[in-house]
Length: 301
Image 1 (cartoon, rainbow, N blue to C red):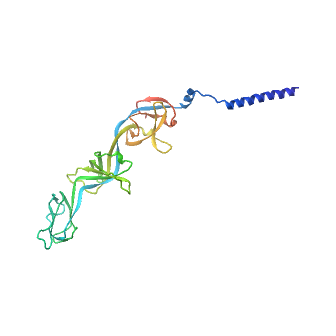
Image 2: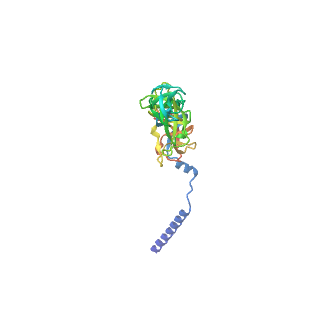
Image 3: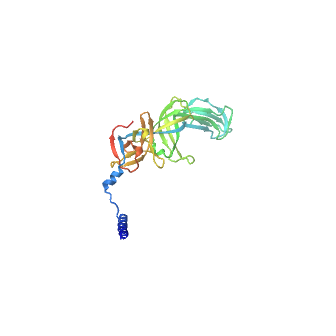
């Protein structure tokens, strides 16, 4: 009789277990929105309320100096050179005689004159030489203004305007300043770069043609924020950025570009005018996470 009661008790218990398991698999636990929010708020961060200022990025490029005008003056007719009034290095004015020729059977002597004012860089012939049609009489250079020429990458060319301020350091160590005077519309098909010319005053002829230079060009101004390099991070795609929080206190990863590296910190672009930048706790949060925020107006050390 006792054994039958045991079987009966076991059967009832098993029945309740089956009913409980079935009911558990069919009924989904309801979580209130409040509890979901509390689960998402896992970390506390300190944010800097940063207001951006308009600042230019400095675009750096290797380049060289190039005279504004430099040509080889050629003969339109062949003939014997009978006069060369100037010598190499002399300054000549537009229209001055460079080479006079004797042509058999012609009463008038053909003249080769300077097409613009400048310096005789070289005199290719002497009196008595025969100059063929198209032959070079002299090389003439006008080095004021002098040009600085740089090839700018296609990803940076849109950031440069005509009239932008520039500074260049010549290979000699001398520093010169000028303004962008020309930006090419078409890229070099081999390098995919654009030619940029910068005019530099060279009245004293101290800047020589063909000298290597390191060129720094001010780009268009953008909103810039100063941050500590300690808060920089990389996203899953390997892009450099920082973490911010929006008005809902949700974490966002913002891709940035470094404009300038100073002893006080980094100036960066890629953000708006007003930003809430995470300065402490950024390593413990993730994209889209809602966080507790402590506001500050000064960057953390």
